[in-house]
Length: 357
Image (cartoon, rainbow, N blue to C red; front, top):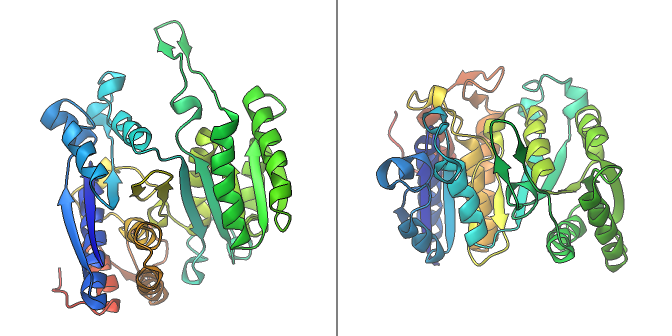
């Protein structure tokens, strides 16, 4: 297979973690006889510094011309005082909107070797395997009108039936391929938008009779996610709730640095770790690259339909963790590594020849 992959390293630790993910993709391509063409472009704060725009038109054109986009992270305090349209995060939101990405898949699993890495008891997190499906292009992040002054700020939370139906369809179909259990999270006791969300999910449920459907208020679900995570399979949420809950779920896995994501819906998907740019450790060889490497595996599976190749990366990560390798964010790692060292461990298990960092 021949594929074009746009790499958007972004800010902070983004360039460090995307470099390790690209190395894994190159190793897989060599092993399986594929040709992957990588081309980098600017996004986020790096793009603001270079062009004044967090999403330059050249970057967007390259993304549209590619088969998939691998993204690192955007943002940092250096750009906190910029106007909203020049904030790094606005570039990411615009990219999602421009590519028509409406479903964000965020898997959260607890690796057996990392049951002690979570601050929760091992018996609570053991066996956790949750797939979050977060609506990505609507809700508060995109709603209009919006305004800000020293005295008053306004955000708007809109959703339409078609927007809810299309992301719910993704969640239902994922549940069919997993354990046939879907929990839809809302705040229908307070928000009209959530009442519509719940009604649409109920209207769609008869189309998927094999799937058990439950509804949960976001506040009570946030507690249940931490106290009994094994009860959940596929979790469907609107944009803001999904952002918060999937970050909360990182405590189950042991670190935010472990979790990947795939943003789907348009012709070109974006694959990125769920963590931020971590500017406090940028350039120090301390960032955990596993979330980005597993995002590369999702890229292979969802963008290029290369499931066996994706499994190779996931198995290499599994073996690396099982043998006790990990960065500083992983509590109790027997063999502490830096970003490059952990990437090298994974590459070696992919059969790639690597030089010691």
